[in-house]
Length: 101
Image (cartoon, rainbow, N blue to C red; front, side, top):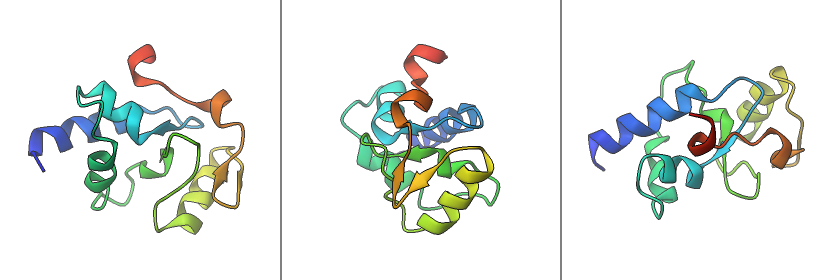
């Protein structure tokens, strides 16, 4: 994966406000690669401890990361409810980087 792509992905994720979430696809579009949502997910395989990866989900509002319990706990601390692997009120709390940057 291109290091510049990864850097841009991480910069966008750092901008997601607390209490909001976005999707892999929205991030891919924001960095100029609209068909590379999976590459965004791959970029998130290695991140620092305090990095807000828990604010990124799929376009249906489902947490697809293998660390579901960790992400659910972190989202809960931000006031976001998760039922199973589904983020509640996903559309209401969705943060679109193309509209909000």
